[in-house]
Image (cartoon, rainbow, N blue to C red; front, side, top):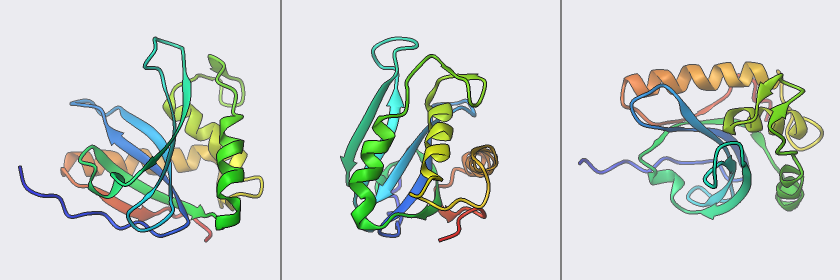
Length: 161
């Protein structure tokens, strides 16, 4: 297997990340806050303990630049260093109920990211459009990247910083 070229992330930038989940065009969705070009923190929900038992995770990592499963890291904004902890604490407060009344969907990692985008637009990250538009943009680029066996870091057209 060929060596991967490490992806470069902008320090203090927040990304919507889509990871490959096998042969399908379904993705694992998460947020990634780059604290340096090679390190950062993953924010996501998983249901490893059983269906509909979602758990929030905050995971420091240095693996994102070389992660083979990564299809897309879509920059949605910048987060000042003094807000990193506050952002983490706020994301931990997003309810993990089975159904999102805001988006009228069953909770999963994608819906949790949309909930997080809604919350973050309240002073953490300035978004030009709403969660649905960012979801559509991310899904489109991840599907293209998967079809071409590519990995990309790119700036969202909704990113204002």
